[in-house]
Length: 518
Image (cartoon, rainbow, N blue to C red):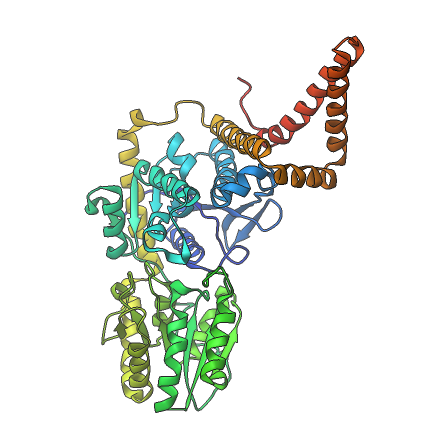
């Protein structure tokens, strides 16, 4: 256990309640409060939905930053590689706030996810020890076609950024052996180099005792919590329901989670599910609820008799851990790390992914055997208290922070980016701008359709610049017709060209208000 107080920066796009209730947001909040509870100073840098702001989360300073200042620029880049554009936008925004805080009062360590390379600039500049947590890297999404991700340049570029960050980190942690082994193979490193740190939970909040937020019923209530998407396996649960009600109609299914556009053809997953339910005639057995706040989730878990986590793949789904902590038996799959959290035949039942028949049989078994449900519920709670309490996970993490400090001191000669840290934003934006210009010039040269769309959008969005550019074109035509014999016309052309260029550059330089002077 570390013997001194550490100043820790957690960088995460998602932090509840404003930006996300998924695994990254949940883990970051539990870790932040766990570290605070054992005496460390914790600051979180996260994204904002609107404006920059600083809020207090029970003694933890949350710096929320907006990325709109980049999102409105580099239209050509955004059209060609939209995901990479977003990743760089978010990473730059959070990096700038982190660096501002770090220069004012240095951090001992920065901790960030590998997903979408949120620690990329920290990895390049090596301003302080870096710990990267694994969730599910983009390379795995590409390899296994999760969320319908395909091996385009856009996705491969994100995977490359993630690999750079991971291989430059002082310590990599994983919530499961399953994910650890996959990433180690992908990075060609020894699996033992990746340290196992399980997901934490606050058992005093996620507890069997307390308010129930769904009305009592004589039916056996089965609960699913998670985004409605193929990877979470919700369609296999829906497919299992006709088989279940054929055996026992005294059941109801509560589905909590936001819809996504991850179904085939980027269509609505909820629409697809409802079409299946209508086809099967099982609508009377379902209740759909939109995503609920993290603090309300325990009341829904307590209202359920059985929880189902039918993921096709999940590194270590929080829904499994939250249900266990609330003393509920869980049906999970072997797809990922769930099997490492859920003790098979003790705290729940494990089935193969994408197997609606196995899901149906597991649910029927628990519905028909209340005594088995009760035994598993008790074991689930005991397992949570023994292995996943957030203060214990925070202690394990703090010990790895000290390891990261030791490795950081020994590896300073291997810094990739040799300039001053604040220069990296300028270089990144310059690279993005040159890529954007290259794409624009290529499209403008070869596509008349693109030209029409460009001029129409320019007229609507920036009529002043549109007028200036059209005036310059008219001046160029006159210059050619007169053989450049009018001196004042040449002067006007030069001045107007300079002004148009300056306004275009100003659009980029406004992003670089912290750029170096040399």
